[in-house]
Image (tube, rainbow, N blue to C red; front, side):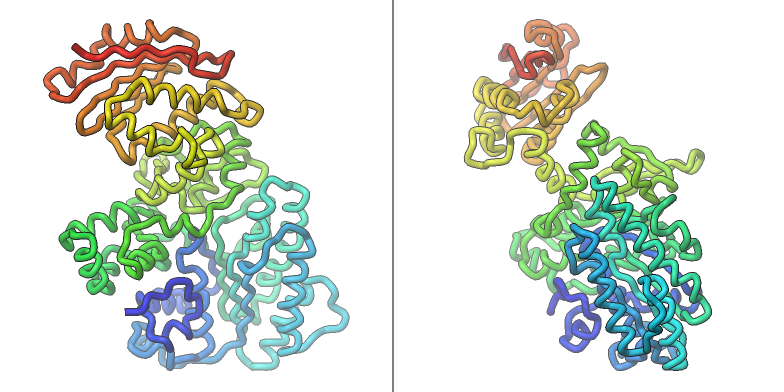
Length: 516
């Protein structure tokens, strides 16, 4: 079985016998039901392959669809002129990088279909290309734009550059509406949907598929598709990892499933991670290995975002569906980029509860954030996560606390800003990372932080105070009986009281008391 990892050409995929999860019935439905569409999905989710599939379909390439659902549905197989703009191949750090890309595509199209010498602007030239393509071929035009938003995303944080990109793209995409009579079908894909005063403000005839229940599985894979198409590698993966097939499916689900794009929707697997897992027969963090955009961190820091809220966010469809570039709210970007997903829906208030989609995303994103909020970035330092865990598993709470204290004392406070927020965010990340290797429970209220860490042989109950004292923190553990759930536990128990000084921005004291 050949896995189409990185294969974005439908023609190559079919001719070279890569496995293909058949989405062509939905492609046919889109072509029959409407004309203008937009789809937002996270990166590496199969958007480019979808665009290539639609291009092959409207090019009349019946030979490529033999045996697929659309082969039985389509009878005519007309060949339409295709205008395919792929904005995913450039780094847009200057206006010239975008204008050069548009110029190159327009030149190619004008050589094929004709050029109006009077037309000067990109938008006007695009309008004439659409018209001339229709007139020359006698068939209405199909327009496909892949990663329409990449220039806008790369300019987040640079308002002047983003305004210039917005002006160029707004007029360019507006040609779709003005040349409607010459167009058969149009699809724009991207990671995000910029709204309000952005590139879509004039293009209001697009049907947004991003939260449409009928097409929630247009990209990605459902559990049924995983079982149907990948029985062979699931069996091989089970053997390689000494698991049953049921255990293997459960592990795949925990690690790569969990994307929900509509309320009460089906779970969608990340296709890139899934295919890599089958190819290598190894569970990994493949989606994160391809890179996480730095603009996400910039948005979180710009907003002074409280990281523990990542798994408690509540939002509405209006927020999730659009990005207002003047807003400081990073939630819509995190959702559309695939770092958060829909976990629950309150129909009465129209509210979505968000959270991490799966283990790969949660672990990868928190690990990515760690060096931005703490000194934990070099595995050779005494702050290595494995050494934190080693101290806890070996019953060395004093060494564990020394590492924690050193971590906070070595942080660049010019970067972290507000000390209370810094402490909360930094310790949240450390606790979450420890939670991937140990059982960690954490609660917060009124500035107080409680932490219970369990390993095979030890239990640690940690009480934090901000501008208090370690003695008072330890006293609270005893007075409130935080250790009661573990009184009959055979494991060794340690109670730890910790004080964080907001003025000094460090842990200035701790006390450790072993249980009798």
